[in-house]
Length: 609
Image (cartoon, rainbow, N blue to C red; front, side, top):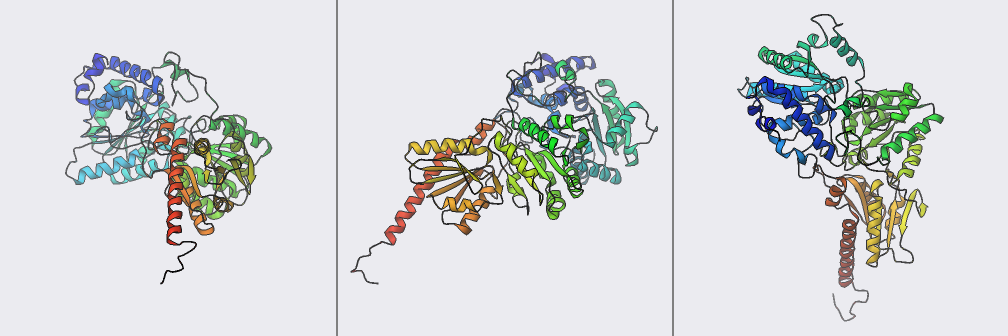
């Protein structure tokens, strides 16, 4: 902690600094962020770009009495540093430490847990109305939104509402021309005209929607930015302050990264920005290579992304087939319904999203895709526990949500080879939608099947032993299930590990397989209640005799931490699964013994009724 960082550790302290101290403070904040993120990983580029803007915001507005609502909260590292959390910043993204996003549990200065884009304006609209109705109209509300996040439909809905009702919200547009990728669409072109001065003077999209427009302002010029914010605060009406910033500002490796300005990074050398360990093949890279190979032979294949072309593995595909790659901006709802139109027109669209972001487009999947039985394939990256990004980014809900969509088939590959073959099966499906899900993790070794049975891969079977325990491993839980099988065998139990490959609809052979064992468990890295395991359990209850016990994640928001430790804490490690199986087996044995005692095979002939 430098002297300036200590003095500016709270907004009140920041406001006591002289203007000439601020450039040095900005440099100290950048140095602290680079030093910390190089050890923890995190979202670096966006936060580097808003250092001066965040300083200006906290000097003009009185947080938390005035509400500062940040959209897509990976730009809030400077905000955390200036609101009492600089001393703990080295705990960033570690289990029990600071969240990588705003967190209401951490600070009164954080109004939302924002990390899904395009929501800040609607929050701000509601807060401003609430302050007015509760007798505090002097409390000011500011929404900080990027040009990328402004492409989302929810942002346009909020602009429409704020402008129509003259809600006194200050919208700070942080225009760095990027989300992950360069911002796409007509809005990006409009902002470019505003930046260049080519737009008609005094009139633009925002003024037509009822906003007073200020800008464009150099968001790295502290004096100009503070002056614009003070003017906006004094107007008492909807105002949009158009600030122009550079993503990755002040850190040479980020400025030189033309792909995404180090939007997100792992552990790096802070001097060079390069990873300290060679990048291992990921599930995402396997997907990208296979989809590109498929498209060579399938001219009907097209790919869609919601402003995340590189993070979802579409770099190779988009380089090879730029005219078959469509970027919706941060607008998952539009992407899914656009895919429905592409499918209705005779193509096979593959929509590549993070599993957590698909939550936003469930209605479109139901009513625009599934209702019409259209052949759209969803590729869901980061399914299950993602790790340090925390509650909003864990892909826990996809199996529970999607398993209720009529006609949707869901595949969960256990290894890279299965990802390739299941993707091919998915895009070969012509009579309805499909989904393929995989985790945020290194793509481990292939796990070949010992045998196949009615579409189910048998990964392990104890030779010449009684069939005690069936472990139904869904997708990436297969390694933990195999580990559990080895532990159970050391206790003298016979174990089968089965991978259904296609999880939904339930394969009828699973009930028959379960009936050959004393106990059966399904294992998934999604929420247990209402998940795929619950479907398997219901099917077995309807069609079999051995109950299937679903094992999965709790239905709650999980904190950030390393993926392996979060899975272990939820009972999804090999030892924990073995303990669960043994407990179920003991319970089943006890129930059977109690049944035998109450219904003896050879009742006492002298007993009377």
